[in-house]
Length: 237
Image (cartoon, rainbow, N blue to C red; front, side, top):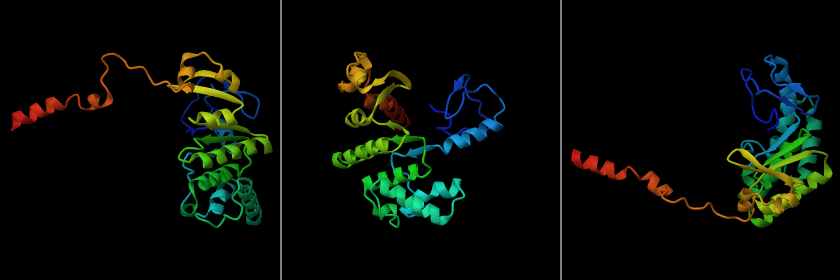
């Protein structure tokens, strides 16, 4: 996890260790967080986030959504912001859609608009959360191509969270598999394909979890106490 990728309050002390992020390393044991907090704010401005559902504000036009980070974090003139938002929309294939509202866009177009907003501040790191979720295969392929175009066009790190194996192997240079909150494998796409690690093979080969002898299924677990309730209600009756 990169520092600044999640909100921190001024009362939180980072775990012991060091992190390197855009600048020389700094110790995270330091309890004096005033300057550290300022550093985190600057780091956040270098990160773009494209949310799974787009997270566009429905009361704003597409252009206003894209312009929002610029209006919040810069002192640019309105005319300059207008030029930037049009450029960002053009980069994601939405040229001419700045006056549309999110409700007028398709699912794939909402994803692209969200990417345009994530690009507004020219981030050094761009996060995607399940970019192809909820899209049909053709539209999802278009989002994959957009990510590849961004990789070629800009010198930025792109981090994608996805369960879509076809997308992952297409767009990734390096892959990381997390299972129950722990990293179980990391490597290039070819290293992942050839991995013999059992959990990796189970995930890539789509092998279901083995049944555990004597384990109740989910419905049985939910209704395990139901007979006792019936008996209790019978006694009351």
